Image (cartoon, rainbow over all chains, first blue to last red; front, side):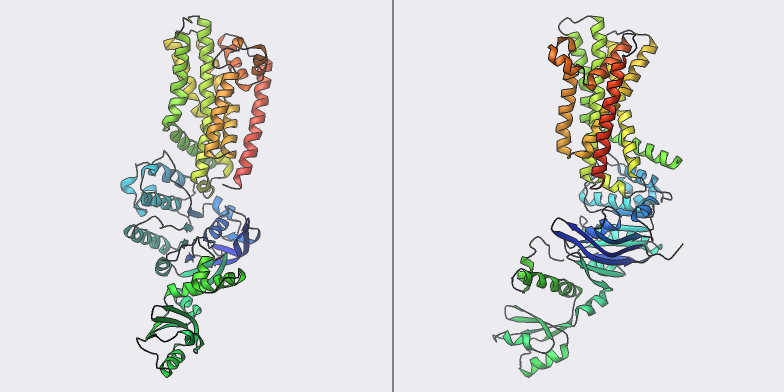
Length: 323
Length: 246
């Protein structure tokens, strides 16, 4: 077997009407990797996945699975996928559905294994359209696994699962990845990307804004957080302090993002403004916001709006905040 | 090739099962034609054996028409629930998916045909040589192909709601104008001449000829083949158009 990457997107663009859903996507998923596509709703995760699977054709750029056309890899049974959209298939039992999909692959896993990995053994003879949302999502997982594909692509696989089912799901997924398979999943849950992926690819507005481990992401977003009590003092001077890249004031407390926490703290101390001082590394959440906010700011400026976070949010009212 | 074939038949088996589990399908394609047949032939003193035979063929054709068209409802449903999209990321090629669907259509018309013919033979005492029964059933089966294609075309082209409405319109329109419910002889002249061009009229005409021990006319065969070609093109164009968006 050659060393072709499992999946490649090379400067891929895709426009739906006025929306640039893919705006020069570059992504390589090596074999055996578990990669998370992290982004808010509407960031372009599903578009990237649909392009990779050959469900959509790009306006420009190159898409490859295992070094060839996506259709070829799909026809060869090397890919399994769990799509985001979709309601349960009516009038078919879990076993019939998973069994049929398995039968279309050249070297499927035993149906009983797929059912048990997805936690469906007890539900095998139930009709898919009579299951709960979480159970139906597990059926779609079993459908993705059934053919025993080398690459499994999961679009928001846990959105309908409760905490416990989510844990079971990721345990199953880890087991599958450990056998040398490649996993690409999209999510808007930071902790999922952090705990289960070897690599996190942050997608925003159809572009990849960061690509690396969680640690690398935190580092690339830059610096640390410094928080102090204002004690009634005006907050205006804070933005001018050394290292400070961003200021957020909530009530009487100021949170500063800084490139150089030492310099910032020294400057605060010089002004005797260190009441309730707290210095902390960026959380992944902060890193994510920093990485995606830059683009929002640019767009906000383009539309003549302010550059505060709230204004940036207001330019994208349909987005859900990252949890 | 053998795996391609077995995948296609496995897919058809799955879809046949799903179709037969649809109570609406069973009632409208088995229950309704049988009930209408028995009502039409036993109410109002219509005891003429020739009428019972002709009505039997007409109602069996009506049942097959409904079953064939309902295929489109299934396709539209699976387009909207994402099943067709999921199939696209299995190794099964789209062409085999369509073939499997057409095969499904070929099978799910059989119960309607069988049920009405049984009602004719067992309840209404229609008598024919065995070979003639077989010929009638076969003609009804093969003759339903254009309607299967029409159903597929509707399903691939339209939304589930629109497919439902268009199927009902096609079903009733083609059944009534084609003389499946009431003999064309009762129609005013202009309607009778419209009827003679419909696929349903020619469909039933061919099967009725066989039931009366005659060979179906060439006109009927040519017109049916023409309709099959037209609906086949419609299905192919609809499929190709939708394949890009499924």
